[in-house]
Image (cartoon, rainbow, N blue to C red; front, side, top):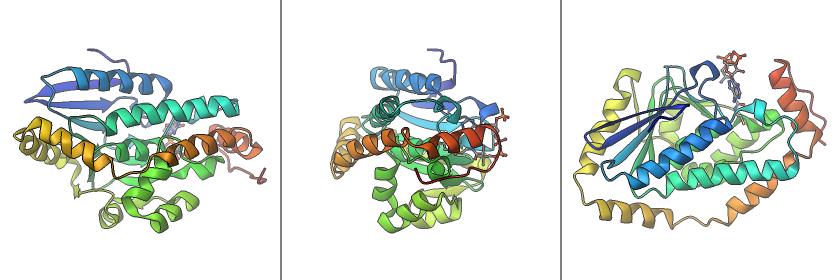
Length: 257
Ligand code: COA
């Protein structure tokens, strides 16, 4: 099925989804989010698909975040709706009965880091960079980032990244357990394909059961809190200033209100 913002291919049961907006570093606009929702329906329903790789086009960026230009002028309620929609799509990835691996081929920032974290595990190229820079914009993560980053790397490291907007490199992500492997860019897809070929040889229902059980360890109440907090940001002057400053390519001047 053709998608306007995604490239897809299927080989030996491994379905590769490539987010394809290289001129915007593969930022997640609403069209990409709608396409991701649709492509996950295809993953669930197409029996020929045994497992999935999600990656970004080009060699610079996996996904550089949600598309900031779409945030401008939104209300608190619209902010909440954005977060809820994003969370629902990423839940569909996390709860896929077929394994989904993120091949992080460059920047995984904001919604890009959140997308990678919604996958069942992550492999990074050695130029990858991870971060949740939303506080630079007067925002917090809204697509599950406050919950999954804390689940994956622990509260202290997570809060340091969330509050500072600092990026970490691939070697640090490996040390934190955010990624399973770091490999040269040209080996990234092959590394994932090798692991998925092994998984594809196992009992599919048991593989699905592993995913269901591992997901059940997480308390999902935190996601509701995230929706509320993300929405509240849209009522602040600082969010308007932060998003405007990004678009105008200048430093933001935050006032704390
Ligand atoms: N939303 C919208 N557009 C984005 C984007 C995003 N999250 N990230 C990058 N882009 C766009 C840039 O605006 C630019 O578009 P233009 O050529 O039309 O001006 C293009 O992608 C290339 O990005 P640029 O900033 O020129 O590349 P760079 O190499 O100088 O910097 C980053 C790369 C990733 C450090 C920088 O793009 C960045 O900070 N992006 C935003 C990251 C972020 O805050 N994500 C969280 C969003 S909630």
